[in-house]
Length: 395
Image 1 (cartoon, rainbow, N blue to C red):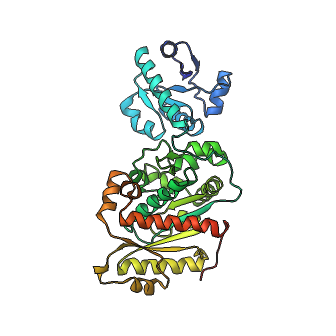
Image 2: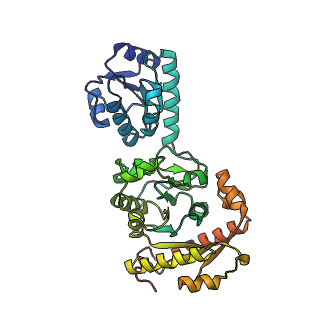
C-alpha cells in the first residue's frame, strides 16, 4: 500500500484518504499552506517521503499550485494530486506537474484508484530504464559538447541533432544526452516520440543542477539508450531561463555524459551564446541554397570574432540537391570553409520525423541514415584522437 500525505484542514477529506490508503495516511494542515517540500515533511515528524501527496486547493489554489510545483521538482519519487475545481485548476495543475485534480466531494473508492494509479506512474518515472544507462557518477574529464547551429530556421537542425544523438547512443548507451535548447518551439520530443515528465525549465529552476542523481532522474529516456532533456511545453517558459542557467546545465551534464548534443534555436541569442561558451565541437548547418550559405557565412564570421569557432567544427550541408543550380564548391566559396558532410534531400526523413522515430532507427540503410552514421563515427574516432578540451582559435 502506498504512503499518502494529505494537506488539508478538512477532517472528512482526511478520513476518506485514510480509508483509501488502507490506513497508510498522515495529514498536516493546509492553513497556513506549507511553503516547500522540506517544510511539509518537517510537519509530519517523519523521515519517510510519501508516495502520493494530496493537496486541498479549496482555500488557496495559488498556494496549493506553488507547493505542488515544488514537490514535483524536488521530490521526483512523489506524485501530487489536487482537490478542487477540475475545470478551474486543470491547466495550471498540468503545468505544475500535478498528476490529477479531484472534486472536493470525491469518494474513497475514486481516491483509492487515483492513489494507486499515481503511485504506479511515479514509480515508473523513477525506475531504472530498460536500456543500459550510466550510473550518476562524475566523469574523470568533462565530456564533449556538440552544438548544432544554423542562422536560419528550417535547416533541419532537429533532424540532425536527434539522429546524431541516437546514432552515438546506439554505440554507447547511457553516455549521450540530447538537450533541446530551442526554448520556445523545440521539437525534439516530437522527433523522438517521447512524452517527458520533466522539461528544461523544471531542471534549471529546481535543485537538480546541484544533485547528479536528481539530474539524471529528470531526464527522459529513449529506447536507443539516449537521455533527453526536452524544451518547455510553453513558449512563455523561455523568459524564465537565462544564459547563466544554460551554462550551469551544460557544465553539470558534461560531467555526467561523454557527449552532450545541443539542438539550438536559429541565430545567436543569449542562450545559444551561453551554450557556445561550453561547446567543444560546433556543428554548423546550412542548406543547399544561396540564402542559407550567406547566412552561415555571416554566422561563422561572428563566431570567429567571438573566438567561438573551434578547430573541431564540422560543416554540414543539408538538403543537398545536384539539380538546384549550386555545387558544393559554390557553398564552400561563400562560407570560406570546407563542407565536411553532405546530407541528401529525402522525403523519408520527413516521414520519420512525423512518425516520431529517427531515420537512423526507422530506415538504417537510407542515405541520410548512412551519412548520420558517418558523422557519429567521426565523433567516436575524435574521442580516441584527442582529449576533451577547448580549442578556441579558428583557422
